[in-house]
Amino acid sequence: MLAQQLVNGVLLGATYALFALGFTLMFGVLRVINLTYGFYFSAGAFLALFLTRNLGFGVWAALPLAAIGAGVLAVVIDAALLTRLRRTKAPELSSLMVTLGGVLALYAGMTAWLGPDIRRLPPGLISADAIEFAGVRVTAAQGLILGATALLVAGLVALMRFTRLGLALRAMAEKPDAAGLMGIDTGRAAALVSFISGCLAGAGGVLIGLNFNAIHPFMGEAMMLRGFVVIILGGLGDIRGALVAGLALGVIETLTAGFVASNLKEAVAFALLVAVLWTRPQGLFGRAAIRRA
Image 1 (cartoon, helix red, strand yellow):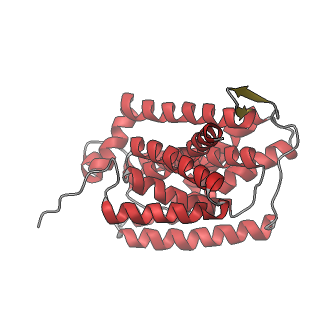
Image 2 (cartoon, helix red, strand yellow):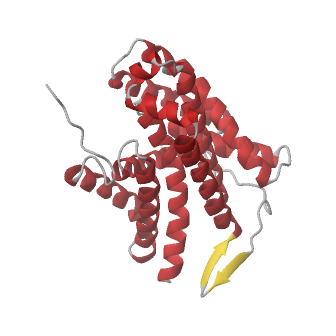
Image 3 (cartoon, rainbow, N blue to C red):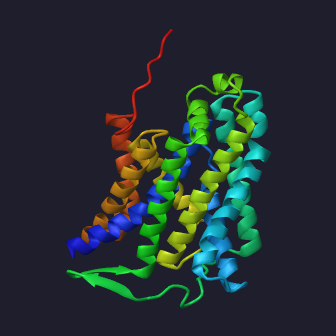
């Protein structure tokens, strides 16, 4: 029982980590808490639903296409809401309030268009068979979650660490004004970060939709709380911290649901968020900022 819950927690945490990676990348490079990020999670799930139910796509085609669609949507929304604020160097609170209004409008529009009901992916979209080893079962959907997360995380790390583009993004994260003076197109870099973050959120929405087979407009809202917990626990802007914290949160939630009560999962996530803010505000992998007068 414990081994099965641990495996389930790691697989769930992999999705949390995938979602939080885009969130922490967006904050780390663009220095904005974009509250529309949860909408991309829902949009990716609904795009996969449309591709599979209406166009007959398989999961292997629907997953990357839905992720790319969510990435394009993220670029459009970022350009509409935040580009002007970046140009005028508006304070961070302005971006927070603009994206808060934007996400409320987006959720309202999606609900009016698609309705609030829970949708199901087509039956047989992914095999219901499971691999069992030493009493631990892993379904095909869970295996896809783990494999897709590992692939996307490896791709993101390789991009950020071993390419000139990643070097440019890291320079922009450190000193955006200096990066612009050195010839980096900061507007294009911001659009690229929005696209990558949207793709990660959209992929997470598809994987969660596959795992629980429940898709609805507000599914991104619940993930935003977990996203905040993960990036604060791991350290704002730290990719390694987001990965570790996402896995840890998934395990903690699964153990709470399995051995305490399922309706306490959100309470545990919130309590963890408060505890980290009280004891180590910079997160487990973050560094305290030094302020000079």
